[in-house]
Amino acid sequence: MSAANWANFEVIGRLLSHGVDPNARSNGNVTALHLAINSQTEDAENVFHSVRYLLQAPGIDASVVSGSGDTPLSLARRSYEKVYYLLKEHLDRFTSSVPSIHDVVFVQFRRVARVARARDDGVALCNDAETVENGDSESTAIPILNHRRKDAKFCMECNHEAPIRSHHCPLCKMCVLRKDHHCFVTGGCVGLGNQRYFLTFLFWCCVGLLLAVPIMWSYMNATVAPWYPLGFFYYAGPIALIRWALGYSTFGSFCLASLFSFAIGGLCSALGFFGMNVFYTCYGYTMYEYHSAPIREAFDGDGNSLGERFRLVFGKNWLLNFIVPQIWNQPLLTQQIANNLFRDNTSIYNVKGIVILDQDGNRVIAKYYDKKMFGTVKEQKAFEKSMFQKTQRNTSAEILLLDGVTCLYRSNVDLYIYVLGSNRENELILESLLNCVYDSISTVLRKVVEKKALIDNMDTIILILDEVCDEGVVMETDVQAVVSRCALRGDEISLTDQSFSQVGMSFFTSAQERVKWSLLK
Ligand SMILES: [Zn+2]
Ligand SMILES: [Zn+2]
Picture (cartoon, rainbow, N blue to C red):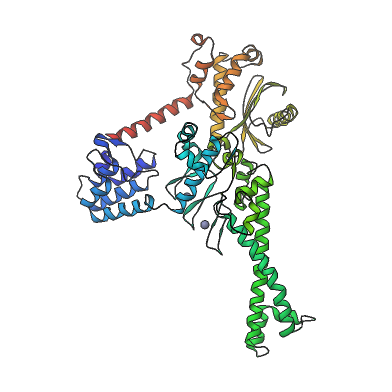
């Protein structure tokens, strides 16, 4: 705050890059933006750069009203002209009163998702969103509204929240929900909102060209040259151009040949794109997602049947779209599709399991969260066996990759403790989880991490595993918190033993706290 007050833009930039909240309020509901504009320095350049840095901060609210009723814009009007136009441009870009296509697409689909999740029967129509907005079933919609941030990601380019399944298009300068591709022919992105029109456009392109090509062929066969034996060469645009230039044919037949070549090219690409789009839709993906392995692995495709997948793109009575655009039939989302489209961050990034084996590779405890990969005991045992063999072969490493699963482990005397995560999972998160499990067990067993002691305290160990990880989501990595919640004889267990990493973490958080306070002063 004092940095903003003196328009010290270098300090502001550094503070913002350390994640300091740009919307923090001081006395009189004044934000850093107010202070920077109204700063006590005479240097216009400093004020300009301070404001510029602040406006680049993700999530900054540039239209906040201070206690004295001033918005940053009204202050800027009395300040330097350059600052005023900078702020005005920012406000026009991000808070325009006319909703952008971006807003329309997202607001609409977010509402659909809320309704789809609020309803029990699993199917929601877009029109039903209105009833929720009007407050008819507010009680069911509110919990989802409150958790809105969890099902969104923040797009730095748009300075906007966007659903997880949207992808930013740098050409269209917006996030596109369920993006298929950027179409260079129509000059726009194809996403969930307009895929139905794209598909019908391609379909009728194919039909039209399939009619036109044979007619043109037979016409040229009759007028330009018979196609057999070499006449069909003359139908190709470039050859017709050369023949016309050399005076062998007329300008009319050259035009006809070029048109014919374009028709053939158009037919091939339209057929190809239509086939591909139908193929991806049949599998419940888009082109972009189908070819992006991490996204494709993260979910099974939208919808459980072909009908559901086509109704997601076209809405009800989807085949009729090919005759008349059924604009009034909004895309139809089932519960599963809504969860896919607006899924939580946490459900993609998770822990697959925690396993403890003894020195012979036999299972002591195992908890698997990924039911798809480790559905049966047989699969689990087979995985444990190959994992243990790999561990034995390479004793120096503490991390190994197996069947696309990242396994981190720590061993002690006759125990091997493994944490399994997907190969996209951050290894540092897995490592902190592993350390937490190990240190908690060590604390509970009073540093005697052995099979016998572990089996004697089995119930507490199971409680620890439940405490650190729930359904594959990391819940807690603080050893003291876990132990104090699990230990039945908590008073007997020493809690003073802090590992080095914890000390490091607490130092880091206190440093962050201090930076925050210096800004608020
Ligand atoms: Zn974006
Ligand atoms: Zn685009």
